[in-house]
Length: 581
View 1 (cartoon, one colour):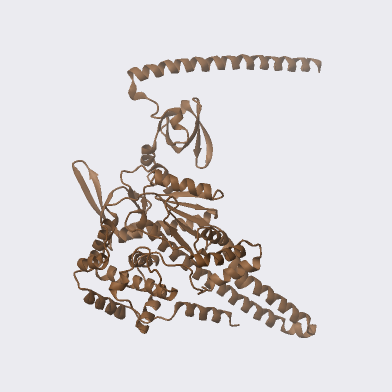
View 2 (cartoon, one colour):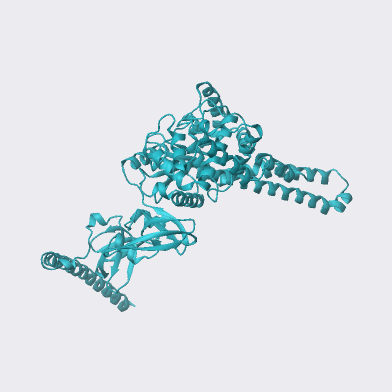
């Protein structure tokens, strides 16, 4: 036993000694290798410049998206987090991975990434933008076409590719186009807005996709929903108004602020003097604050409030009633009719759920339409095609705003539920504002608010038809006389009618005189219109006198659309039907 212990001690001592010697040897070997490598690097720099290992310095590599080319022929695409000289720390597929420098042939940049990864994500494209064109086409097979869009029709788009000595054109069916991606706008104006939003809304995360950036405190799943909406409307706007956009560039990044909780969205609007409780969203064109402001009407918080209003409270009351019935009668009688009682209760609860889904669907449609409407305002303003102003509260209504602010900021959940109920049922209290834009701005925005773009807005159609029934349709010279910061002094009912006629007239022009209407809009964007130039330029573009154009417009609306029922009343009757047990 003693011999065994002595032998074990000797082995341990030998291992310790040799390990220390090996470590000294390893350090010396590494030092020698570094010196040799430095000498060889100097030799390469002077005599073999084509053998450079990388086009990036260590400082430039930090945080850079890269392609690592290994000596065995394989590649790795990721983000280089750290370069120690001996190793590279790479963010690869969400994991920090250590790569030894001795295994690496060379490191490439974003141009190499585009070559190595034929299918890039929108996030990668936004960060790298490895393309020649500022607008690229994402196809339905997820490939990206980097070419200039030269022509757009209802059925196809034409792409022009640069080749040696000229260009080559290719027609792509619209059915094979998923959406467009626009190069991010990184300039002083964009950075100023972004910095201000970060300072003002510190809890919010930012998500940049192409030329729009979303600030929100909503869950990531809902962010993806809004990204889809904004990608779609961006593409639709560019294709539909191609003649206006093709020779222009955006002045800044588009920004969208989405509050996860409606109450904070309302308070934020009130602080600006805007009646945010009356709208699902608005575009603010103030310098340094240009952004679309809305709230997450699709998310969990709003859904929970609506659930409690429509299902939760009444469902609890129903359960209490059932328990009361069961406890207030003879047990034998209850046993006999228990299946019937439970069946009736289930039928009522099913109707409550049907009503919940109906309300949520209506709210989603209104929310998405608002986003498309306001993003149209933002896009046209950003590309220099329209100049916008926003309504503010009248002085006499600021006291009312402060009272509402106190209610909104309170912790009284019942009061907050009542306010949400008034929003869901589309409270028709009078707006305390003056409308802020001309017939052209609102006509285009309402035309683009529906999905598919340009489809019928039944509420606006009903309002227009009501104008016809009342003989209240504005003469064209009156409608087009409203200018920027307009509809001023009109009562709320008149404002609703003006929006409806602006939508109807813009829809007529888009369907019957699209090319001429584009010509008119281009002129309005590039020249300063005088007092009566709005209508004069429009008549000149379409080649008609005012009374002829007016008759064509009224005839078009009479023949293209059937009479519609009031959408608000129809929705109300639907809810009554769902509530009838």
